[in-house]
Image 1 (cartoon, rainbow, N blue to C red):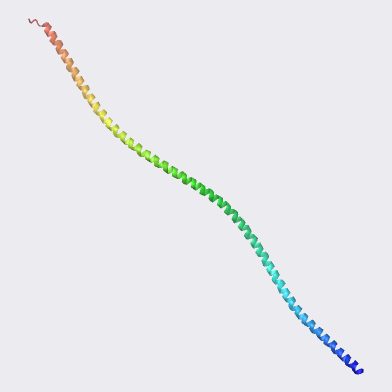
Image 2 (cartoon, helix red, strand yellow; image 1 turned 90 degrees about the vertical axis):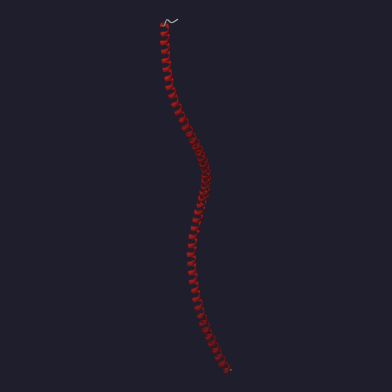
Length: 173
């Protein structure tokens, strides 16, 4: 039995050493794996923090872009209203321009007609002035002829009176 006890102790010692070696090997294996996993975890955590920081920066940038977009939308809406207003004003002005052009054409036509009437009237006035001058000349001529005729009449009266006076003085049978 001594041999079995001795062998049993050696086997137990061998099993204890084997267990201790397995335990040390497992501990070293798990420690290496733990270090590797811990390193990967730290890298992933670092990447996660980096991504988180980048995400926050992108979120801030996105917020700024949203604000700019909102501001641009408001400006676009205001510009759209102003464009509509300007377009309506332009259409109104275009209509007024057409009306004014029509009025201008009508006034130009009236002006041409009035100028034509004026020319006709001036021609008629010139003709009437010529006629007045002719009639004035005829009047002056007739007045002169009247004066001459009155003088002749006066002379004839005087001659008649002289003749009557001479006849009255004459004693002829």
